[in-house]
Structures are given as structure tokens and as C-alpha cells.
Image 1 (cartoon, rainbow, N blue to C red):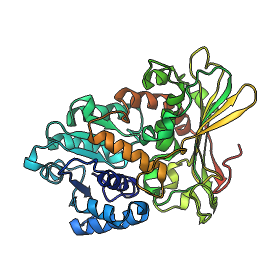
Image 2 (image 1 turned 30 degrees about the vertical axis):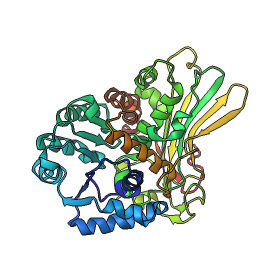
Image 3 (image 1 turned 180 degrees about the horizontal axis):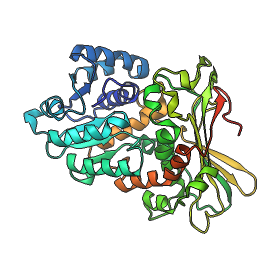
Image 4 (image 1 turned 90 degrees about the vertical axis):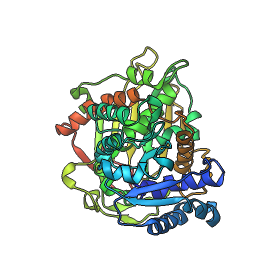
Length: 408
């Protein structure tokens, strides 16, 4: 696990592995080698992992948590250094030749260098590489990352592009829609939490790159895909806007100082301006709120605006699909509903989704992996929006933390 000392590992990946280990779903002889830049030894990593698990997965109990800690070790390494990765990742494999799964829980800006280093490190035959989202930062970087992956772990099944939204049980329960009888469709990822220690990562992504281009576009595919289609077929039907249309079809903003809501996991505490959060470079103009209106080019969908809206530090938590019907009624299909959280953790839906993802990855499945063409197609949809924002054609608005978002 590259990035094993980071937030994603502590909050989600380690609790999910504890759940799988406790259920007897990890192969005999399973070992976890954590790789990071902290100057730790095995004992220090285990102590840090123990603290994170006590906080984020208390429901499993101490015995289950300790059982996983008995099969973990740690290597300090620069994830961009092929020789260091060969020592840290390849050498621990039994005989140096047993297949391994390498999970890249890394920031986007170092992902390509890490995959290139893994290619040079020569992973054992049959190994897999799992890459966290966002997959690249635009269509060109996604295509380049796809090419690197094909060299580092040859074969489409060896490349695993993680979007844990695909592992949420509620995603499979979303309605399949044709557009008939609808006046509007909203795909929502509205959160009451702020940055929660992720400012340094988030400031290089923003709401559009963090959740809209990946999680939310998968939610749209889930409701718009028709029998016999692939998700990529839906992506190809989304109308590509020019920059003028993108400027008129999108909004962006970031929160200012305020008190968070007490809803959806937030605790009502005061937070500073986003621009004053540790790890934020205000000159990047990173958005914490994004809204984009899309259209599907098909007869039944042509009249239905599809609004994607994501935000941090909002008044209420809503993650799901809001169907607005022509008769004036509406219905919200909640993405967090029915989460089967085997970890007893504090972030139920996400940990449950990562249990499904890791189970899939480690049994050579691909049910929750994003296909190579999907990653590139999704970036192409949002390229005009990002260009309009870079050109300053969509002002960066503001909203008070804990409010309903920007008013204009």
C-alpha cells in the first residue's frame, strides 16, 4: 500500500482490511506492506495503524484489529524511486516472484511518477495495480496514465481504477431511467463536513475533480444506462459543450468562515475561510462548490437538464439522485441508504464500499473498476468547464460555511 501513512489508508483502507481479515476472506499468508515517507519502523507503523483503527473502526473490536496488525510491516521509500520500490514492494514477495496487489493511495500529482517507477521495478507476473481517483487531472493525463499502467501491469484486468462509489450497495438500487416523464434530474454530492485534515490534497483537486468527474458521473451512468449498454455508452451520449456553453452552464464557489451544520456527521464547530486552511494556496482558486448542467443526446433525454452539484461545508448532507417529474413531484434516491458496514466504522457507507472494492481487487474481479476508456471520456466531458474556469469566465463565488451554498 503506497501512501499507507495517509488519511485514506487510516480512515477507509485499513478498516476495510480488518473486516475482510476478520471474515476470513483474505488468502492464507496474506501480508500488508505499508510504504510511506515517514521514518518509521514496523512497530511505529503498527502503533499508528492501531490508533487510526481504534478511532475509525471501533465496532470490530480489539481482537480483530490486532489480528490484522500481526501481518503488517512498513518500508520507508520514495514512491517515485524505482529502486526503492523494488526493495520495498517486490522484494518482500515470497521468493520475489509471488503476485502482489499494489494499492496507490496517493495524491494525483505523484500518481504517474509512482506508476512509472513500478514499471521499472518489474512487478512479478500476475500482479495488479490499483489506482485511486482522481484518475489524472484531464483527458491527456488520464490517457498517459493508462499507457503507463499497461506497461507496469500488462493486461486490462491487471489495472484497477478505483471508484469506491461503484461499491456502494445503494448504487445498484438507483432507478434506471429513460428520461420519460422527467423535467429535471439532479445528481448530488452535498456534504456538511469541511476539509477534515485533507486540505493539502483537496487544494490540488477541488470539488469538480474530487467527486464530480468520477463519483458523480458514475451515479449518472447508473441511472441512465440502458439494457445491453456499458457505462461508456452513456458517457459518449453526454453532449460536449463548447467553452461558451460551459461558462453559462456552470458555477463555482468556496466557503468562507462560519459554523458547520450539525447534520450529516458535522459537529457544528467553527471553521476558518477555506483560503486560510492549512495546506491551501489561495491563488489556485480551488472551488469547494461546483455545479454543472449537462444534457444527454437522445430523444427521450434531450429535454431534461441534468444538474450535477457538489459542495463542502453545506447546510445539509444529500448524496444521491433527485428525480423531478413533469407532474411536479420529486424523489431523492439516497446513496447512503442501506449501507452494509461490516467494519462498524464511523463512515459507514464508505468503509462498506471499500470492503467491496478490496474484496474485488484481491480476488481478481473487476466489478468495481473503472474501464480505461471511461476515465478518458469523463475528463472530456468536463474539459470545456475547466477551460472556462481557467479563463476566468465563471467568477469564483463565496458562501458561508454551514449555509446552503452560493445564492447566485
